[in-house]
Image (cartoon, rainbow, N blue to C red; front, side, top):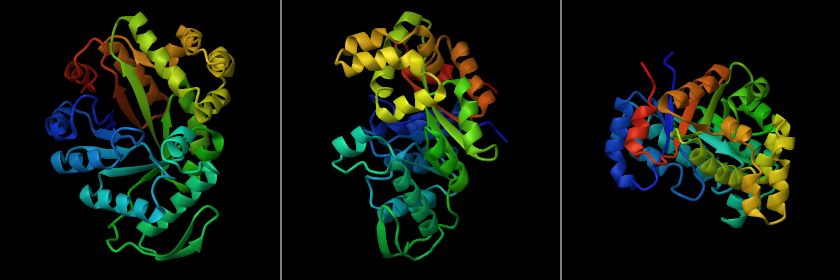
Length: 318
């Protein structure tokens, strides 16, 4: 099977309407996938719908759509619509997201994330299989829902997962897991929970510059913004990085954001953020693949380099 190799879309500073030529360029360079996100930019589905129409060579995925921010019926309809628009090319990513995204930004109570993710996963699988659902789940109640446009085949569904319980759920009831913010050496620990026969996708942050000081400065800001969120902090405690990150967490909790950034070691940065020359970056991505990632998806941060040049320089080698 051809190794899948993706990019995160949409690209910053480029409108969705301008992405048509970018999608063609990406496919021509040998990338197999484009994966969207759903945080505070575009929604997860619109960029993929455009890619489905404009570039039929690309596989499509969303990593991830929060299970709280759509009703379960609408979630099933959105997945079914993408599966119909891109038959055999779409992978759905569901996840709990985080308290800031769900509760602070969307005004929805962030309660029982494991149970909510489990229930939404179970509902959408049954809905996509054509079942009429009338059931009280522990976190959601549904009466009489049935898709009017059933899909020919349920697309793969992966769970955004960070800790053992969710990783095991991804392996037990979904088609695999989506990982984020981990080192290549961490993949094996996650793979052991998900299972050898399941798909693992991972978003990998790439700063393609040989100016290590610049890359690490940018990376530290990213790390302090993400890994101070409770779910990510607990993930890294489980991975065994707690002692290394504790000084940052303490400074952040004390309100000293500037100090928090300075307390992230070069070693941690170099484990979690891919940087260096194009060759060095591709070699680092390969370590994730060798560790067990089936679908690496690069989130390119073009610092000091043109985005087009970065995408070309990071493209998979034939």
